[in-house]
Amino acid sequence: MAVKKAGSTGRPRKAPRKKVAASSKGLAAPDVSATVPEDGARLADQIRADGGSALAVYREPLGGHTVVAAALPIDKVEPTPYQRDLSEPHVKRLANAFERVGRYLDPIIAVRHEGKYWTPNGNHRLGAMRLLGAKAVVALVLPEEELAFQILALNTEKAHNLKERSLEVIRMARGMAALGPGKESDFADVFEEPAFLTLGAAYEKRPRFSGGAYNPIVKRLEAFFDKPLAAALEVRSARADTLLAFDDAVIAVVERLKARGLQSPYLKAYVVARVNFLRFKKEGPFDFDATLAKLTASVKKVDPETVKREDLSRMGGVPSESAEE
Image 1 (tube, helix red, strand yellow):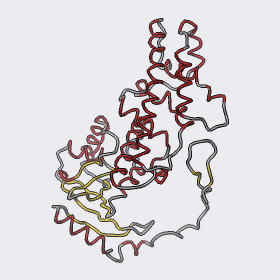
Image 2 (tube, helix red, strand yellow; image 1 turned 180 degrees about the vertical axis):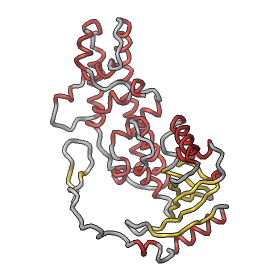
Image 3 (cartoon, rainbow, N blue to C red; image 1 turned 45 degrees about the horizontal axis):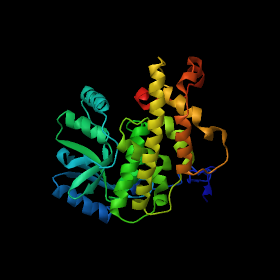
Image 4 (cartoon, rainbow, N blue to C red; image 1 turned 90 degrees about the horizontal axis):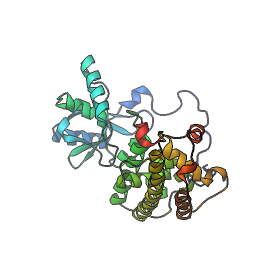
């Protein structure tokens, strides 16, 4: 049974995982391909009609759900519209690796969408195959289109940084809101952290936003909303504006510090930490708008002339997003 997590994130904490007996869950190896599921047979027919080739229809061994292993025309495969942006250096590294071994052995995951195929897990592999001029790509195709939102959590192809994950989450939220009703809190497991939604909205408005400096504050203040996604997104957008106003005030102080000759990747983190009274407050919760207003007012009172080099070296902290990248 889920219990409430301490603090104000609004995420439930799951009970500790119980030990299970070895080889006690899911399907036995012969059962994986013992029967052809009806939804798998229909999907295989659609894949063939789309110009692809259905290689096998089976049930995956953990939950017994349908999967079609297929070769898809590469020009009919595209990333989901809400996931992170492609990393060109990573695509080139993958392409070089594929070329060295002369093989492509790691299928992407895909769902069929209006005669095309969305991949929520495999965009960089897809990009590498395109770079090499491939005609087709092998995929594990799932019949449930809505699973595309959840499968992003399985994406271990390239580690997310804060910016990538935040943008991915806010795009997922917009996609889910367009599909139909549902509260933001209903998708807590998919979004992981409510802070990603607010930070993602801020990154959309300001791509060079240094979210790492503000993430500890936003995580402390945010919780998932028990309101429809569309309404929640409006609040996230407004909160992003409030956060960016705080960022503007911090940037003004940082520029004055730089004018004094102080150079460090930790300048913004130092300024934020200097006014962040939440560091000393273990109890909560705190109101987002009231807290940001107080922090912004405090930043405007910071006198750069009082900051010493040794203050920066003692503070350390989280470098700006540009320093991380």
